[in-house]
Image (cartoon, rainbow, N blue to C red):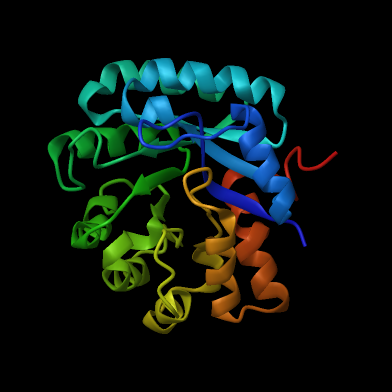
Length: 251
């Protein structure tokens, strides 16, 4: 069965090392676990310099057809991020945007984040948003002002995964993606009981920071079968990002 990973990373982290060449780290893990397509953000773009990191990732994407990109948006430098985002989206290898709340130090309810959401609403691409605390509950109210924006709730709220489940149930433009290092049991089942339909569940791994086996275990724990499993592993992502069946996929 095909797999699209909607939460990957490319490049070295300040607290993470690997002996493998950078581009091959992603592809090697994808091959090991049967992942066909991975949508990645640049580690440099997330942690240090969004514009420079996005440019470095663009060069990698040009040589790796199984990787697609998120252009990282820095809420603190919205004008530079807008020009950079539009530039990379025009090239066709970037299919969405990524915002991390921790590194730029901007909470979901901040004025800077609202500006970033307004930009993404105008551009019309999906946003992968890092979430890790009860602040995730502010998303439905925020999205009410931005009717075109669709948000992937990265890590499904992290430690606040229960709050994230109920939040996503309130807004049909919120998608849950459950990757994290702690393999809490029954997270997906909890979200479905809260009212989140299977059509808004996505598969993400947090590779290369986290081995994909953890996320695959979460999917196995959910007991998904048949058409539901296909939706979560690739169908929902293909529809959300306009990738067809598998985008470039495995040739």
